[in-house]
Image 1 (spheres, rainbow over the protein chains, first blue to last red):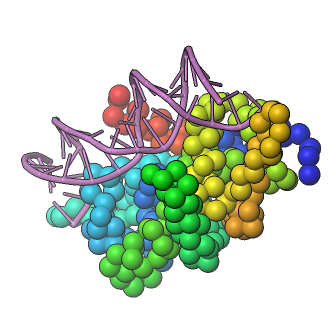
Image 2: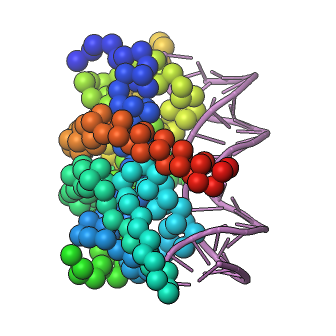
Length: 128
Length: 128
DNA sequence: CTGTATCCCGCAGGATACTG
DNA sequence: CAGTATCCTGCGGGATACAG
């Protein structure tokens, strides 16, 4: 209950200071879930991710590709056709993500309540 | 393998567009792990989180407190003494976080390798 | 259809110094 | 000891338009 903490968490724990725990950029997790049940084309992804501009979607996909989580396949033909799919490495993230997702489902209300009462008492306590 | 995706992932899946999956701000996950084995004082947190300025550490802690994940306790006395500890809600995050952490430990090398070969072929392929 | 090209901006987060 | 106060910066990410 009172062992000293390691001197530098950045060297001691997960590589790169545990930042992979954030699962990449803002849309990465959502994209991965969109690919969970099979390959999708760019335009197919744009539907559920309607709030993401094509530029940003491309950015995120490139980043995922770079990290070996997603594979991009171009099919030759008259009209462009590109498919994105999870690599085995990408699939291996589904477990942890499901775990985080379940947490959110289960505790989201608590978190919102906490937030609300914190804000309330701040407003009252400091009258502003 | 080709069911259509839900129209808007933001309404369909985890609350707030799955963003809780990012576990808060840049340092949140690290802080939570620092509190895993019991309450810590501000200055105790500063040691392992030596790269985080006091301002930012305070910010993150406040945010965690606001979300009901961390409890802040002030002990009266001659000199200031403040302790931070996980709430039950905060503890409930340890599971998912451990899962994400284990993933990072296990697959970090693969990810780095992927990144490297992606960057290499970009450099060669486009000669830039 | 699958993206780039530009331009733009808020704000998380860092540096540094100071306080009760 | 446990923070604030200020100032500053990068860049993630959005809007809009265009291209192969």
